Length: 592
Image (cartoon, rainbow, N blue to C red; front, side, top):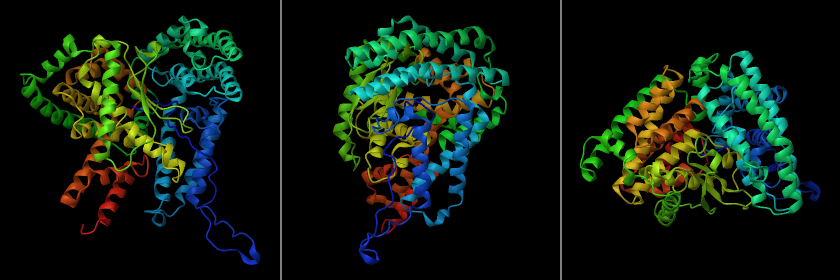
């Protein structure tokens, strides 16, 4: 999973200017006039620059030097409506472009990424997400402390920007309270279980002294006395009081009115909302019931594979009983926090060594294992990936939850590390960013269908690469597969088919090796982020289908490195464009 501060992130240099001029001179010896930018590039430059102004936290997420690191997103209705107006304007301009003229050109992926994003954003407006955004995973109460660990503070100017941004947090919180209060008025609320999880996080934040607060995380990286004093003061005198206001609002005004039905079906226009979120995350127009049925089919396939390994290495054909052993028997759990981290680090080392045989292009940016902070371990920190800074100031991070090692099954440790780092998220995202000649839209915008689909595909590729150390770890790979198949079952189950939270938890416990506590956290994630969890298996199925087609058509001439390079060459493209790109590549192979 990619950790994001907002629904969709991007970063990179702004104002890239016109395309290269032709050779020769204009009449009279004057420099030749630059040709006009293509219509696609014109929209892309405007959208990209505008995105940073609208969502400045994204610039910090990716370490962009020349961007507004001194402010926060404006949550006011006026700002939101103004941004939606700009999105509609850009979409109208894209719809007027003749796509036949840009097929196969560098404009094609830029166009496809923008159009899919803008259409999905417009469709998602029916959800009114801003009116019920109480999230233990993506809420500001976890994102801002993470931001404090990412934002640069290595110069007087950088420290001034960080301080100005932190001084704006109380106003941001008050805007959020206003939006949530309006949601109550209009009948939009977050589920009660998610609200309770956020309350626990806020309580943990408030329990820390100001100098130890995760909101003061800057001071771990900068010892300038004046800056340290200023940050601690703003946490003590401004941020913590705002946190208390938020907590009081949630506990006294919101919780009793939070919805008890987990699915968005309980909200106004909930069915339309769920279809829109499936489109947003997968890039495909999907029917929820068909997604559910696909999950059941995939689960049957995966459990047959599990049965083979269970008989070979664990002396049983009873897969559910074996999965329970993985959960309950201490020999299958980690022994310590240090062991959780060491398994992940060892997996990354092996993957790095094996990459050249499987990928023509390799990433330059390093990736490190970064344990979650204590306040977020219980409910807000599944394994996730944070990209490296564009300016080279920090490596990419695999954020790993090592908070409860003796109740964490070992089985999935390696597979999750491959998913989040190499050959998964880090390989794909770093390669996308390390394309300086490409438009930044293709370097930094992403969709879950491609990105999560690739990372799940990478877990299987890691087995082909010989990276798993035992059949226990291969069962972890299959358990991860089952987890993603279960998501296809339970996500539409919750949001479109009337499933309860308990029904979803019971299904996932029965079909994966994950602990019940992990599954509960997962289900609460699906509840507050409808549609996202389906993107993993949907994307992987498409990548595997394209690979099978390439292997069949090319036969002995199939080159796995060439295939992988083609899949990754344009960044995170919508799945329909990926399909078209691979079909075009296959058609261009001699003799095909």
